[in-house]
Image (cartoon, rainbow, N blue to C red; front, side, top):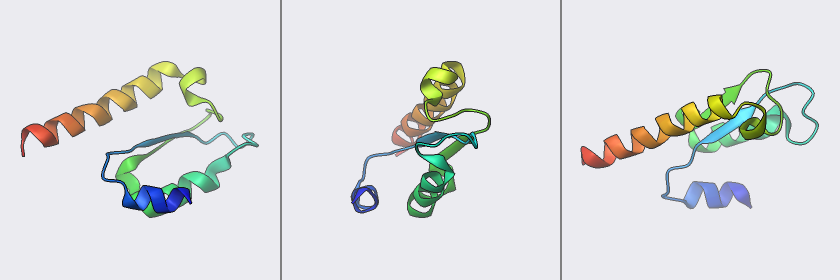
Amino acid sequence: VWKDALIKTTIPVQLIWGIDKEDQIGGIKAAHEYRKVKGDQYVVMIKDIGHFPQIESPEVVLDYYTSFLDGILDSESNS
């Protein structure tokens, strides 16, 4: 179900994913599935971070997030 919604959306979306081997909730498989649907440029995988990257490493997540938003704003201003 989530893949269909992701394929159909026209809204820019980025996945920021922790790839700690100990993450028993999501694991890396979901990130790879997301990458198949949206492509590499929309997936960030952070080593040594678990299921909650926004809590475990908020500064790193913020850097990726602001870069993503800057890219969206740049592409809109160049259109």
